[in-house]
Length: 212
Image: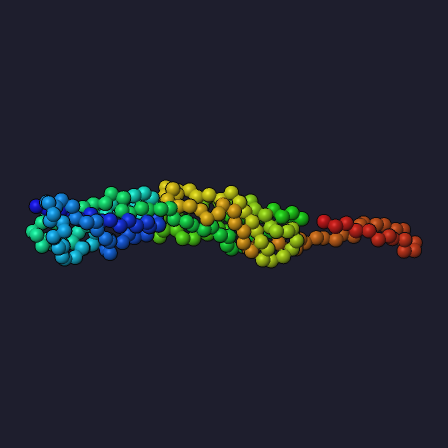
């Protein structure tokens, strides 16, 4: 004679996290004869469950199989069951931000030019490298104004995720901004215009210059 003990708890975890294999509950044992279910007393303890989930597995559902040292007062053999969808792995949310300095010389426009070094990505699972997940960044952005200043706000849009594990992530926002902008003063050259006069004449020169 035997009864089965199935896990009856489910857990939702974020991609890259570990699953809890202890502290789970079980459904009432099944397979009793006649009225034995109400007469039987189950003693002992549940052990660490087993699972087909491994930390870093993709988003999806995974099993949990009970283990333990349970015994039946009526002599039933306890078999430990498997819950097919006990573990649900959901996508991990990551946040992009601007870093470093985005600098240019004053050119009367708000156009900003960025590089890969101006971006960072937070909350990435430590087991994923840059080929597993990377930020598809843009090189064009905008300063909040065109004037000379430091600590200017630079804004970009059109960001996305790429890589072999990108489907396990969501990007918090495709548009971000940060106070990383610097616009420096533009150097100009003032050149006096060439002029001539006849020796002995009075000072008939007139002022004139060019800017470059």
